[in-house]
Image 1 (spheres, rainbow, N blue to C red):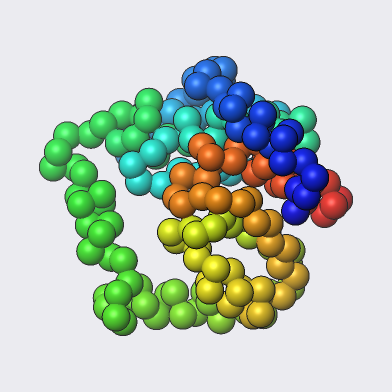
Image 2 (tube, rainbow, N blue to C red; image 1 turned 180 degrees about the vertical axis):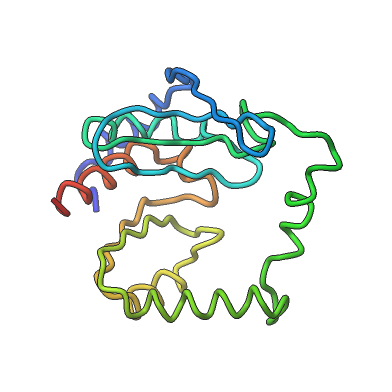
Length: 185
């Protein structure tokens, strides 16, 4: 995608910032404070982190979007600057690995995934898929499947990467999302 810009992107990756320049916000959720970033104006775009990360993962990507949209990046409860509830109230986090679909189990989760997959295969709204090689969660074969089956899909190959692409390619991700969003308007 960025042919001829290799030197620029290498320099951009070298300038990844460790700073987190966002003012803290908080909201009480079921008795725990959830910290979140809230910058920009306009259509809301929510940046969700995975387990075990936080909104910090999005720190170098949000600046590409906040001139165009309202960026909201929560620290889910138990992560980042959000409250860490008592151990007995962390059941949802302990349950999470047990709810991942594997070999058709658990049945209810597998059913929801199949229903969502069927909907995505017919949904006519624009979609953006950012991926890297060799990838961990989205490998080349999954990208090829998505390209063949998901309508109105744009894919962006970020280059080499495994799992935390926001750390490896923040500038490419920020640029790709901002450009995609502007084309939607």
